[in-house]
Image (cartoon, rainbow, N blue to C red):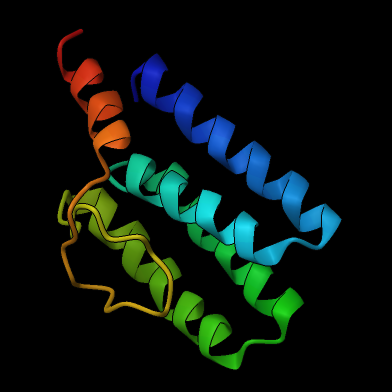
Length: 117
């Protein structure tokens, strides 16, 4: 994982963790979705994003999110390990784990800047 991607991923996760501590689970989840898109090609970051999504699901007592993340955790590890991920997918249980989505332009710039180095 190149430094630019690692830094942006860590920034999103750090913001999410801070918001989780404050009880702002909705905004925390937005940052986790962004972290998911940034890190989904890499096993450890992909797993971290799903882990914290699971934490949010538990804090919110959302059975749907808890169940969805328990399924996505092993699938994410496997998908990243073999290089098969639905690009742009935000990782939450509100969307199919297999659906590709458009990548937000600011995140695409991060991913593109990594490719040029």
